Every structure is written in structure tokens, then in C-alpha cells.
Length: 283
Picture (spheres, rainbow, N blue to C red):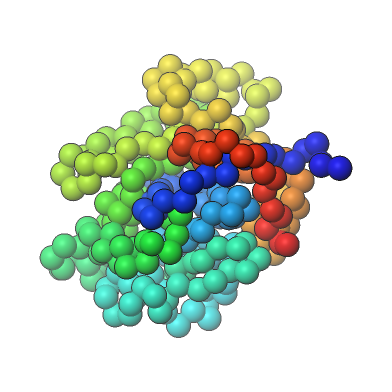
């Protein structure tokens, strides 16, 4: 019998062009890496071919899908500085059923090196074009700052998902990020837009949370995802095991929320009518 908690999704029509989405917020601690890892794994559970790009020098996304960043001889740094071809850096992550372009401490040097280079803003975009046909979705985890790495991510992307807590200063930070997205769209990447705003660590019992959520709806309308991500201990525990929440505890509230988010994204991408239950990432 089908588990009542299991999410369902429409199967999609495969496109030769992948959807490239940056997960960005210049404020740390908002669930950016958690969203990158778990959205990638959830899309893969719906049989999407997913490449996860770790563009944060901390390498938490890399570790979060079971890849030891300290043992990576090559990383996204080598791709951005054109030292190694992207095909030779991408690694499989069997437990999450995705591919990863890993990161480690080497990436700290990339921004300094890129500042002297012509076309520095488009390095990632050109690299991803080489492998784009292998994937349905490319998810990019950006660093928590609006630097050259984040610019590279946005120049390469079709859209930006902004994870944010519904707290007092959230809207102020969102305004700055929105302005950056508009500037990049105007100057370099006209197809760039806000894909969606994701409310994370969401507690509907909190009056401030509800007030900020209402303001988001007022200003951004349907671009605020219907799905919100609750505070959930399983989401917090999973990275220490090198697993997305879906592989750590399939039926946790956090896992189900990210499955629902993947479903919402796929429906927005014009899905076919046939329903299916997502696979468990650990199967």
C-alpha cells in the first residue's frame, strides 16, 4: 500500500536543454546549502538527471553528498581557471543519485585569479555548456556573498532560488540580491530571473514569520513557493552522515518538504499528466 506521507509528482518531458538554477542568498545560515543538496536529491528521486555544482569554498555541499573535499585532487577551481576540463572533474554521488562538481579550499584563490582574466564572468557558463546535454537540471550552490563566484553562477543560470528565513531583516537583504539579479540580467544574462523565493526554517506558530511571509506574498506574489521548509532535526543531522535527508530519513518532514518543492518546480516546468511516486534516494 502506498505510504500516505509519500509525495507524488508528474513525470516531465525530457528537454535537450537543462534548467540551470542558482541557490543564492548573501546572508549565511538561511538553508542555502541544505536546499541545494536536498533539492538536487529530490529532483533525482523523480528520475531527473541532476548535476550539483558546489561553488562555495567551504565545500559543505560536497561533504553533504558524501564526497570528502579533502581528497578531491581537482575541483570547480580547476574548471573556472581552465586548468582541467569539467568532464574530468565531475564525480558521481551514488547515494544521492546525482553528479557533483565538487569544491574545496582551493576555490578561495579562484576569485583573485579571475579578476585579471578577460571574460571572467562567463567561465562557468562556458564550462557547463560542455556537459549540459547530459542533464535535466543543474543546481548551483552559491557562496554567501555577492562576489565573482556568485556572478559566475548567475551568468550561467536561467533562474535563482532564494532561500530565506521569515525574520526582521530578511526583506532588506532580499532587496539587495534582487538588485544584483536585475543588474546581471541587464548587462550579461537577459534570461536571468528570480525562479522562486523559498521560506526556510518555517514556523507558522510565530507571528513575525507570518507577517514577513505575508509581505513576501504581497511584493513577489506567485514567485514565493507554496511549499515552505520546516525546522527539522533530520535535515540538520543528515549532512554529518554525508547524505541528503531523503537518503537519511525518507519520511521526515524535511525530506517530504523538499520532495514537494521539487514537485512544485517540475509542475512549473510544464509536466506531463502521468503520475508517479518518487524513488527513495538510497534505493
